[in-house]
Image 1 (tube, rainbow, N blue to C red):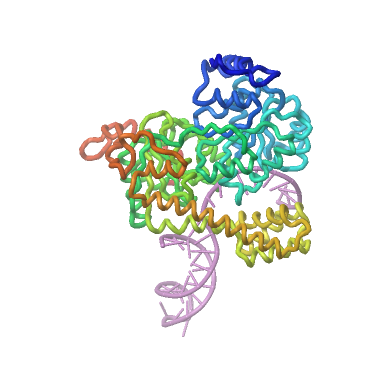
Image 2: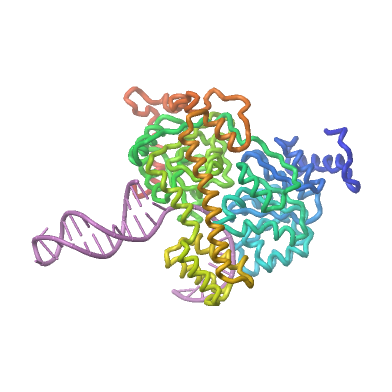
Length: 522
DNA sequence: CGTAACATTCGTACGAATGTTACGGTGCTGTACT
């Protein structure tokens, strides 16, 4: 214990608070001691200080807001990006015996929502989306209730999604002020310099205590493989997967690719595979996710839809069949490997043809100048009653050729910036904003690309981007430091005889049968 | 960039060959319809 610590809070001596925290840690959570920097985070929150914490997934982030919920007076409000994540987190609290926990989202019918809003004073934890919390009816109800802690889980979403994809993320600071500026806790596993800056800026965390653990994962090795085209990449992938340990995740940039690779791997290697992307039904996504988590799948082929909130300790390999457009996203995805402390492998397959796709994604976030001009004029002339007609507006703009994100971007700009200003000025603002944002995203993309063609140590280069220095280099660091696929040969393949045919027929049969179940048509 | 779906062109005047264009990723929400 910190016996020398000064009692900094007059009403509640801090050591007494922390003694209480220890007690809750044992009695409610059943842990004998704090892990990582949980103690410091909890201590700061109990002293009513804002906290920005960066900890690896599985490092015990949830406890940082759960525990203070049992000591502070008032509601712990947790802003969470995904419905499934909210439900999972609420369930895990219920499993601890907590019944004063609710979620507030579109899965509830109107009566259930009303009931939750009328019960706020009796609750300890409320999970909510950034979109829901921004609704006037909801924020008005929350204003009337004492909020002990304003938690933003997966806070990198502010930077990664807030500017274009989910603009409500950029309005959390306003909401926080409206709720009486409660103590704020921002949590994430991965934040590069720019993401950190955005989190601080858009949550008003300038004076927050920062507990930032290193993003370095010494037990994950980095390898980049060059390929001529996608056929070459597929072959290299199959060859690779035939050698290394699983389970593994293959990230690709298209839904169709995830399905195709899943079928190819299953056909050519007999592995238990499945695919996962945003175009699937929620039940199917849940089913596949559970199968992967419980070890019923060897390989999961997916888009970037998969992974947030996923905590599977024994993932051995993460392959990027296409590369993401930021180092932050890359490290986030790679960081899902080897949480158990065993050896992990991150392989990026690169072919020249891949280089256009990320730019196409960036561009699809914004409308063309002509569509922007047309849309703003329509809105300005009152062609649409907002918010009633917003979906009709989105549809019209999409038919003109803009993506949904681009269409919503226009609407968001109009709603937040138009009041009483000439539409021409708003147009100029939008053009300037688009240029700025595009250049920021292109810089991130350029950084990602330069990492791929990096001649020096990939770990050193990656860490420097996150503002860190490499302390000690692991033996199997990266391809530039001499690591090769051959260093990661699976023990499971010692069961292969010289002809390459697996001897363990029972295992092989199990796998083939499982494939039938996952993909009945192949 | 690569692919697929559609359009145009050629001559085998209705099916094959070639040309053009659109698309690619992440999720919340409310409301009106079946």
